[in-house]
Amino acid sequence: MAVQWPLLVFSVLLGASCGTLVFLGIGEIKGVFKKVRFPLAVCALVLLAVGGCASAMHLGHIDRAFYILGNMASGLSKELFAVGFAGVVTLVYAVLARKDYPGASKVLGVLALIAGVVLPLVAGASYMMPARPAWDSFTLPLMYLGTGLGLGFVLSAAVVCLRGEGDDASLALKLALVGVAASVVTMLAYVAWIALAPFPVESRSIGRLLTGSLALEFWAGVVVLGIVAPAALAWLALRKADDGAGAGAAGAGAAPAVAAAGTDGGAAAGATTAEAAGVRSAAGMLWGALACLVVGNVALRIIMYAVATSVESLIY
Amino acid sequence: MTRYTMAIDLDSCIGCHSCAVVCKQENNVGLGTFYSKVLTIGPSGSYPDLEMYYLPVACQHCENPQCVSVCPTGASYKREDGIVLVDHAKCVGCQYCVMACPYGVRTYDESKDKGVIEKCTLCAHLVDDGKTPACVRHCPGQARFFGDADDPESDVSKMIARKQTHKLTDVGNKPSVTFGLDKCEWKGGE
Ligand code: SF4
Ligand code: SF4
Picture 1 (tube, rainbow over the protein chains, first blue to last red):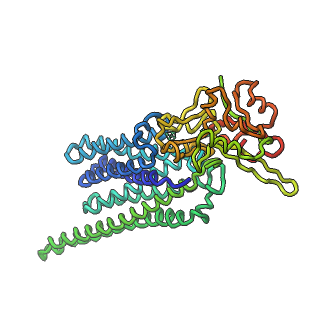
Picture 2 (cartoon, each protein chain N blue to C red; picture 1 turned 180 degrees about the vertical axis):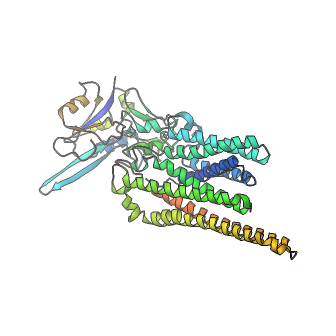
Picture 3 (cartoon, chains in turn blue, cyan; picture 1 turned 120 degrees about the vertical axis):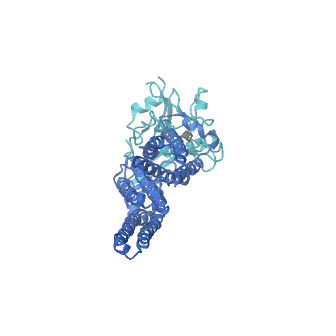
């Protein structure tokens, strides 16, 4: 099947939006990320809205878009409903995040977390159909969820680091690494399904990825940029921030001795600077990881469409 | 209950493509678009024991049509008499049905009602007029039969009774069109 670009863009942006919602939900439960929750919620909303507009470009009749809610047994109707739910939850959360309503924000944060997990699963499940063997597996919605967590967690952690909130940064960086791990595992699981899918023919074989016409997308796009690079960068970012914090702590530890000489203020400032520099360079690595993840996600979805030939392609 | 469908005697098909041509004429199917096509299967075997047959394909008017179950608008629907159709006034052109059909027999017809899905209608407009589909009427090999699969006296049931029969690969959609083939080895599906 030809690559459906509007749907591809939608699914990547939807993943990033949902991963961000899950990140915010975790933050609310733990009572952290207060300074970034508003910009991140707006970011999630914009990503979902832009993705939604992109997916509408796929329709032959945009004017009839609301007819799509006509058959709730259809994966597409469910998906539109889930997008609406996530959009409303995110909007209300964003409005609350501007003010100080801890109880309400926590409830909405949990709802955002639920929406962030459910929406990618619903969106991915809409592709599961026996007519397209390469799609007919639960590994596809799982891949939508896992890659979304990777995109959203890395994006959110980069924003946390950028704002220099040292206390939140360590948790954010750990979450980014968890998100990338989820992305790696679910990407590999989906690729494994391509190898195992029933009704094997050349057009949807694993050989097309390993050595055939999709080898560039697979090796350069998925393996190097989608898996290896973001994993390495997220790990290095965590190390960098830890090193900065370590240097900061060492500097602060030296402060009492130096205090006798009347320069304690200078030592404390040095500690903070080292920590902030570590977090800042971690942010840079996370932006790099995010860019790699985006390319990897696009590459995997190009493959996902390319191998989605029907059981028998009789006329088209 | 009426279950309109088609049965095709592949031993009688001469591969002339008349059905595909007359289908385009009857249904005003645009350039580059087909509701119906004739595929050549083979040759297979090794010389001098070679064999080959023609396989006319179109929508199989499935008993459990996946195109209908996935359609979010209800535009794709199955009539009481078994014919699967698309209501162009409701179709949003999301192409979800195109993805869900196991046989690749649905498409946009850009030259006609733009932005909606097209496929074989089993000439429902003729059937409702008491006639048979155009491809059945114009087949010079008399290989195509139309009728009620639930009526043992129908042309479809009679062909099924006298031939070895096959269907396209069934992934739960239960294709209703039957192919009869005695003289060659069936190469696909069930
Ligand atoms: S052959 Fe395809 S288009 Fe026709 S009824 Fe079956 S699933 Fe629908
Ligand atoms: S393209 Fe039209 S007929 Fe097909 S699933 Fe979408 S709305 Fe239904």
